[in-house]
Amino acid sequence: MSLAQCAADTIVVLDFETTGLSPNNGDRAIEIGAVKLVDGQVVDRFSELMDPGFRISAFIESYTGISNQMLAGAEATETVMRRFASFIQGCNLLAHNAAFDSKFLDAELARLGCGYDGQFVCSLLIGRRIYPDAANHRLGTLVEYKNIRHDGVFHRALADAQMTADLWLAMLADCGGNLTFAEMQRLSQIPKAKVAQWLARR
DNA sequence: TGCCAGGCCCTCTTTAGGGCCTT
Image (cartoon, rainbow, N blue to C red):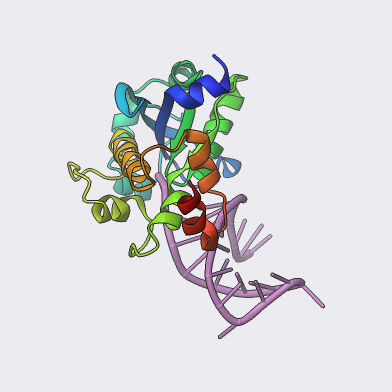
């Protein structure tokens, strides 16, 4: 499948829970959640805990609700990520603050010697451009701002991925409903002062 | 010993600094 084809057809919305902020400091992924969208419809989901091979901090246990006991019964991060690499092949990718998730995806897949062929788009960057009046642009705030239904679970990977997918669909609708993935990616990169003008020309 | 991310984006900017956002 070419990139042009997957841009039109399939987007994987993903979210990692991790042991910290930086793989460069030894942090690892401990949970991956993802929602696969085809033409705005959910066609598949991926949700796995994964054991990084060391104990996670009390802060991360509290922040995510994922305990060391839960991870002790999980498969190794490498095992899960190998399956996830197959899940995302041929798809473009979306995350809230994609710089964070792409950093961990790159690091975990590099350990396996494999990669992916899609491109990332970031709902945080788009949200800053099209919802300048929101109190802030955290995922939870934008979900509330757009009155998106949710079950009250935050900081778990599948729940956050599902909310990001719903936010993405709301963003598409608010941009006129006919922008392609590539156009949304372009929108995320243009200067904020030119967003209204850019959308008006569409 | 002490510290430990990094990209985006705004502004009292651009020869910089600091808040936001992700865990």
